[in-house]
Image (cartoon, rainbow, N blue to C red; front, side):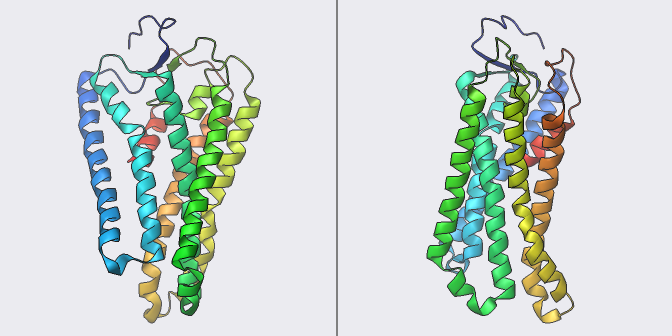
Length: 283
């Protein structure tokens, strides 16, 4: 991609994918299809859980917030990606980049905490079914969701402020499909060891939180031999698979980007596997 007036542009250039026109159009169609599918699916979950009285339970209450997080997380990056795939110049303003950093961090961290909350909900439902309505009262569910949102938004705000204060010294070419903390830190012209360590510790903690689902999963494995409780095991096991896929994808994405030594952005295209994993998380 030809990048004109790099020093005079007050924003960032996103190298993204290949410049082949056919590949760009193919990617545009595929990403647009799955983006619309994601929007329709999450909106349908929110509407159905609100309208159907049979779904007015803590589990579906948490599912609606999970769908809302997915909507915010996906919409923060995919529309910009689609716009850049259609245009000759793949650019984003500084404010738009900071906004993407904050929303992606906030929704990612909040979703990790919410998955742990959902793990607690399923654990109580399976192990203490007679006390479920008392332990997971609607007021308690609202309090858990409020704490989840507040924790994710505040922690992400602190990280975003720390990242925004890092001087870039005019470097504004990002070898990625959108603004993300590890790739933005690679543009810094100062030592970012503190930022990297802070990001690594927070990310490791948030990725370990959903693994609390190991407790209800182990409880369900003990119940698998009892046919009368197999129905109760289906939904938690499906959620467990979602958590394991989320944690594996995040670790595969963050590990090489955070733990690798800082290097200036390469002039040639690098491997596109981080972009592929990122798109799978987005869609």
